[in-house]
Image (tube, rainbow, N blue to C red):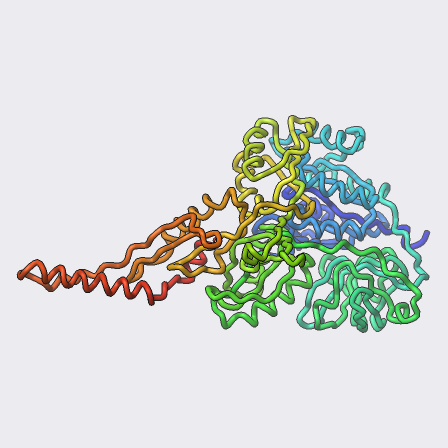
Length: 595
């Protein structure tokens, strides 16, 4: 039997918090990959952030030995914002364990990840997890899974990632049902880069799946997409720590230390091969990943402007291990120098900001998230804008289109009414309603992305007592009656507070912003006017009264005209100050307003 026949490459896919990482811990324990004394919870979640939040952010590979077989597992995230990490994992394996929480049942991201796996023709092994919980409804969860996969309930494995019940049976199913890799061991090297990290001592480290051929230290390699050449400094496997080995052969998953200092040269989804193969045109690149398109944009600035170079270097290093993060320099009169960054969603934004602050010791502020818009100018030129300040005046604008998504919300029946109302209030267009076993319903809507980037997820969880889950995919751009809402402080626009919004929502949003700003800006020696404006039209206004010095304090007795004279002099001074005075907006006000 060829060595490749003894290899099984698989991953675990599930909705967020359904127990993927805990199940992976049991796999490591049962296969003896990690000694019991070194075992700890969420072992494959290597970031402190992952442990604290109890979620997986980065995919994590590990090699295990089980009953004479080599099992390469990739633990994947479950949140919709990190679905690109899941797609990369699926492209590197032949099988997937589909995990469902026995107390929660099938959820939106369960279905989304299942569809991704089915598109790649992976072998699906269904399992119901957390059977040890008091609230577990095992039969209901199995019925839901069986219905979706069109299989009998007997084919579904019952497991407990916490106690280890059923875990060996699940591993046996992986060995017997997942096919071994199909690759040519003697063919020229072709390897798929499914992830990469930056090591400050060794440069870019590529995580690869060898499809054909083999690779070892000293080989001269090239990457198809970038044309970058490098010498392999080291190859190895994941135990889950990086462990050096002499060679990586066809069908295996491992890492390659390239020594490259320019992190952008090792792109996820690229094909790695021996340099001579490209020169002689002897191999074709593998089918990579579709380019990840960020949906949400926000400005990220340092509180201390002197930290700007540090922020630039930090983003460059983070970009290597996060294919969805994009950025470009931005300058704001209010916040100084920073970067306009693109993200897949609000959780992605939150995680990136926190990683920058923790891992690179930065103090940051992020502006209000917005989406990108497609505009057509009166001269026929088409542009994509990611910042509200880039929107030209109405006389230069022929049309403006916003991104729309297909949104799937899975919820218990009793919460359906409130969620439908929420979706309609956010300009959602109902497409379908599907009923599932177990009293669940899926609401399928088409809705503007801008309607869900702010507080939609919180509102959804609140209306459903935490039971509803969502998944979405990008549809395209659609024309809409959109305008730019500017916030003026004493007649001067504040760039970081500008937003693009549907005309029907502009009045309520403008009023909300100026009311909030009034509470945050300290009183000045003169009256400050806060206005929300669309072009030259003011739609909301609040005034911050001036600080009033008691100019009559030292005055006693005498004629009334002496008092009036002093008060008139003070009034004239405030009027003159209002014309020339600069409003001091402390950075704390921006931090609170943008938080």
